[in-house]
Image (cartoon, rainbow, N blue to C red; front, side, top):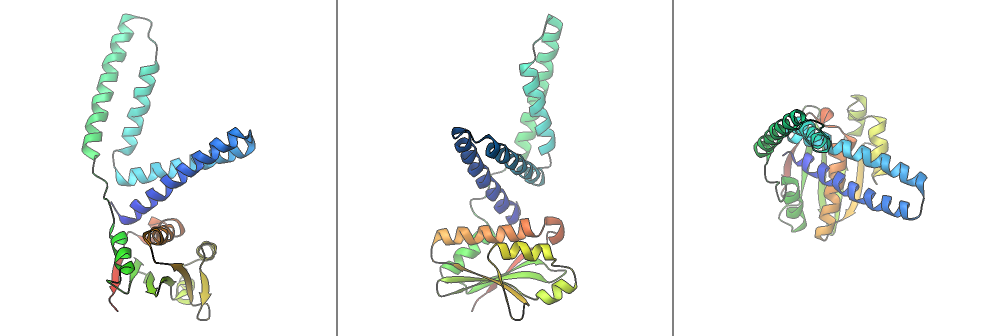
Length: 232
């Protein structure tokens, strides 16, 4: 699976767990207004996960439909032997089809990703940093360098990108909310993150994931992402 899909899926799964915990707390405190807002957030997260699942697995929509049909038939009460026989045969057919599609689409999830391995190489000093190319066609990319125990994440050429509408005000607002600031007469956005432990690596990967999958959509990036190392 594409690294961005892996990271984005991890992000939304983490959000899903957080929202579930918050919902339990809101219900315990009988704060039903807050609970309603959290449930709305859960729905949006579930929709994002469903979309990611579809990108990962071309059979995802059919599997979802089969699961709904199987649940319906299992809960459906029949009144005649003919109905019972028909429902049993239909249920068996749906279950067999579901198992076939599930087996065809099943693939072991990778334990790591190219981006994760690259970040670990920066942490251990094997490379000085890297450039994450988001789109080769418009020369849009981020650089990540480690200086002492700090990672410097840079998005350059803002003036050119703003003139070409590659980067819009909405993108800039989101990036600034994520901790980026303007430098070099507002031609660069830069963020400074601690980089000394594996936990720091995970946090920086989440930041890069949000940029490559939330700030900029898959359609905007066109699936062109690549990584280029800085050796010194």
